[in-house]
Amino acid sequence: MSKASQTIAVGVIGAGGMGGRHARNLHEKIAGAKVVAVMDADGARAQQVAAECDDAQVFTDAHQLIETATVDAVLIASPDRTHAGFVLECLRQQKQVLCEKPLAVTAADAQQIIAAELKLGRKFVQVGFMRHYDPQHVGVKRAIETGKIGRPVLFKGWHRNIAPDPNTTSAEIVTGSTIHDLDSARWLLGEEIEEVYVRGANTNPALGKDVWDLQIVQLTMSGGSLATIEVYVNATYGYEVGVEVVGTQGTALTGFTAPALIRNQLALTQTIEEDWLQRFDLAYITELQQWINSIQHGGQPTGPNTWDGYTSLLAAEACIESIRSGQPQRLEAQARPAFY
Ligand code: ISE
Image (spheres, protein in one colour):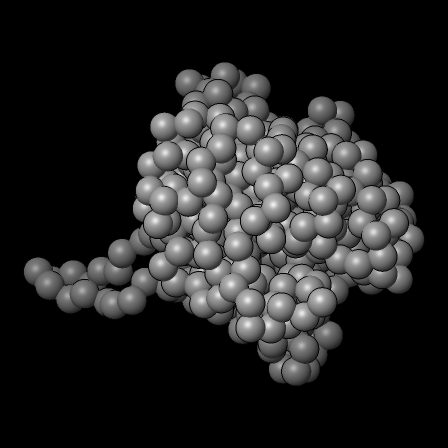
């Protein structure tokens, strides 16, 4: 059924930093959407975000929110380990769902989501790889698609967080941070990941000396392209994400995003963003608006899908195994269902 003129009633699961931002964006900035429900295990936190959204209904149980008849579509921004179960529940209720990355914590769980969605014969799931909506990344993609740099042969990505989560592990850095870059390499090169090799170092002993807060990932892609990804979650100076794709006739590079260059006291300065909420502010809004538009106009999402969520998890698991073994890891080739 087309919902072209209908306002989409959204239920938001998770009222932390990310869920709160999505809820506020939906409420204040997105046409054709209304936040009707907010869930968090911490009821007071859900209440606070709901109050900012015209007193949306408050839940502490995600399944109840998903089942609620007045909720048309669901946005999941709860802890990673809860994602797969909530997405499967949305599929059971046949509700469109935008799930923050990672889609699941294991590729096996993501495979269950593929099976459930294939059975329904219609796309219901979008994954929050918001780099796809960042004007800088989109510019790089467009340069590739329009042949400006010839045939792409190398992806270079860098990804720096100001500080790590205090109790993080090397594996969590892969599933929480590197997974974006694994997806970006696949998306921008238009190839699947065939082999991964991770080297790393610990620069912050407070994390535990086994935790690699600096990781260098090398990828071999299915079409023969190469990729390198630097992830440094203890960069201290600010948050920065960028890519360069090198082609046979040129390169496409994301630029700086800060609005102004300041000259004073014999210095030329430019500010650096503090975190992803600042750096990808516009990308999050565009992602949501296009998600809502797709639900209104055709009922199926057009952004990163379950297959992207699944294959990025396969690559993430291979990275974790490479960290454990110290060896390169090959990924088994996967048959992509025509549906995706
Ligand atoms: C965070 O959870 C995100 O999703 C950001 O996009 C990513 O850049 C950051 O490294 C993660 O910690």
